[in-house]
Every structure is written in structure tokens, then in C-alpha cells.
Image (cartoon, rainbow, N blue to C red; front, side, top):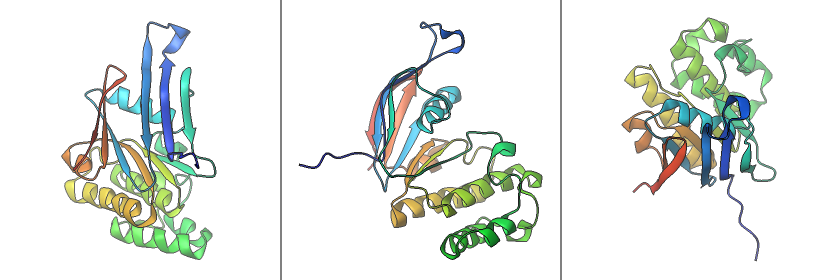
Length: 213
């Protein structure tokens, strides 16, 4: 029998806080698995807990115990886990990205840019866009890159409802049509409504995993 491997799995993942104080875990014994073609929302009362889990899931912060594993051959991208100035798209413009991408990816990006109401600003450096524009541009570029797994934080924080819905709908369609695996911080009811699974955190630990109806 062929062994099944989820797109992304965290197995008893833990990260100790600064200074190596074992009594000060940032996250502790976090376990959950994410399949291709699903959206996993990471929820909980503390934003820092969500971000810590997502940074470990994306490989930006190493775990000090347990394991984070991406299935062999899959490509991972992340959005919202670094300052905008450090995002790959920040140094250029959307127009430049459209010119440099292969035809198929350029079409995906062009459609996303129109949908996220960024077409008129495609020649503006991403770092000069509004916060809304920067976040939307990062999502559009990430989706166009055709990753298998996308780990995201602060997707819609501070965005007006229409812009937030456009970002969430773009990702949900990539999940349903292209089999993208999304692991994202839950930010209100709108993101929970698009999720397939909710992982609830409290004090850096998983306290509940719920499959959404």
C-alpha cells in the first residue's frame, strides 16, 4: 500500500522563545496536516500564536522540536509573513512581473490584478502602493507563481470588506480549481467561511481541530 503524505504536516512542532528558555515556548506540540485542495484556517485569540505557527509552517523560523514536512516535490509560497519591503514583488511593479512570467502564469496574474482592482496601478512600484495594494499584489503574485502550498498571515487585516472578499475569493478559487493547499490565519467570519478545517490555538498549543460543514 502506498503511504499517504499530506501536502504539509506539522508533527508535535515546538519552538522555544528567545534565550532558549524551555519554560517559554512560543509554540508547543503543534500537530495538524493539510491536504492539497483544502483551506486550513489557523485561529485563536492571540495573533502572535497564529503568526508563530505560520512562520514555522513556512520554514521561516526553524522548529526546536518536532517536525514540519512538505510533501516531496511540492512548492511552497508565503504571503504576509515578511515586511512588504522583503517580499519578492516589492522591488518591482506588477507590469514587470507580467512581462517576465510565462504566458500561463501571466494570464493568472493579469486576471488577479484586474479582479483585485490593481490594473491602473500596475506600473507603480509595489512598495509605493497603499497597504491594501501591497497586500493584494503579494497575493496575486503568489497565486500566479502556481505554488502547491500557500502559507499566509494578515491577508485581509485592515482591508475594506470588498477588497478583503476579493482576496479571499481569489484564494478559494485556486483551492477548488487548481488544488492549492492554503494554510492561513483566520481573520474573522469571512475567512472561516472559506475554510475546510479550522485549527484552534490557545497559549501556543492546538486545543481543537474542526472540520467545517
